[in-house]
Amino acid sequence: QLTGHGYTAAWLKGQYEGNEYRRAGLIGAGCPTEKDIFVWASPLQRTRATAEALTDGAFPGCGLTVHFSPVHNDPLFQNDSPGDVTLDAQKQRAGALKALGGSLSEAQKRLQPELSLLKKAVCLPDLPCPVFDKTWEIKFASDGRIMITGLDTLAAMAETLRLEWSENKPLSQVAFGHASSAREMGKLMAMLTPKYDATNDQPYVAQRGGSLFMDQIAKALQQGISPQDNAPPDTRWLLYVAHDVNIAYLRTLLNFSWQQGDYPRGTVQPAGSLVFERWQDTDSGKRYIRVVFRGQSLNQIRNLTPLGEQHPLLATEWHYAGCQKTEAGTLCPYDSALQRLRQHIDPSLLRPVSYAQ
Image 1 (cartoon, rainbow, N blue to C red):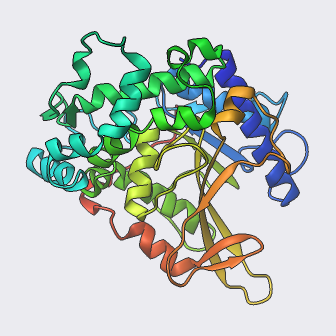
Image 2: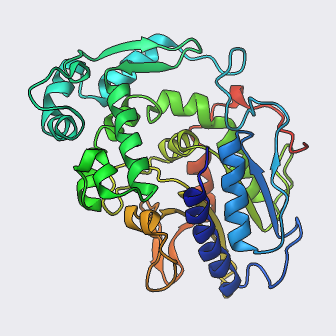
C-alpha cells in the first residue's frame, strides 16, 4: 500500500505538474471542474491513494473526486482476467526468448556481473544462496501470463531494495548496507530490465494488454477535432492513474524506450507519467502531438525534494523521423503521430468502456 512517504513524493510531483500547466495557461487558479480535469484510477487502494496525492498536490485543498471502476478488473488496467483477453503460450514463449537473446541459460550467463552485485548485497558470504543458482525457466501463471522463474524472484528482490531506498530508510537498512548512493542503488535494480523485456514489453503481450487503453488515449486526443464514440470524458487534463505494467504496454506499442538518471533502462518509477499532449501552431493552425515520459529521480523520491526549475523531473521524449524539436519540446505531426498510436491496436480487443462509478 502507499506509505506516507510515497504519498508525499507523489504530492510533490502533482504540485510540480499543476504549476507547469498553470504557467502554460492550461488550467486556471482555484479549484477545477471536471471540464478542467477528470481522474480515472485503477480500483486498487495504492493506485487510488496515488491519484489523491497527485491531485492534492496539483490542486491543494480542493479534494478532487478520484473516479474508479466498481468492478475489480477494470478492462483498461486489469484486463487479463479469464474471459477478457487470452494469451497464447507459444507466442509468449517465442517473444520472451527473442527478448533475452534466444536462450535463457545464455542470458543468465551474460547477466552474471549484475547478478553478482545483487548476490553480494543480499546473501551472506560463504553460505548457500540457492535463488542465484536456480536455472531460469519459462512457466505460465493461472491467468495465462508468462513467468520466468528465477528471474522473476530476482526482479522482485531488486524492487524491494528500491522501495527501501525510496522510503528513506537509513542506509544501513537499504540492501543490507550495500547501497550508499543512487548510482549503487540503480545497479542493484538491473534485473528489472530483462524481466520487463521478457514479459510486459513483448509486442504481442503489449498488444493484447494495451490495445483498449491506447484506443481510449487516441480518442481523447481526437476530441474537439472529430466526433468520437466510446470515448473518455472530454476534459482538458485527463489523468489515468494506472500501473507500471500499463505504461509498459503503451510504450511498447509506441516503440518508445528510456533510460533516466541512475535507473536501469525501462524503469517506470513510482508516479512516473507517460504524458500525451496536443499542440497547435497559432500561425499555421497545424496540430502536433508530444509524448513524454517523466518522473522523479531516485534521490528526489528518497529526499522528498521540492520540484521546480532547479530540480525538474527526469524527462524523455518520444520521437521518430518527421518530429521536430521546439521550445515546447519534441512535436510530432498530429496525423502521423495518431497513426503511430493506432498502428498496433488490435480492433478485436476493443469494447465499450464505462467511466461511471
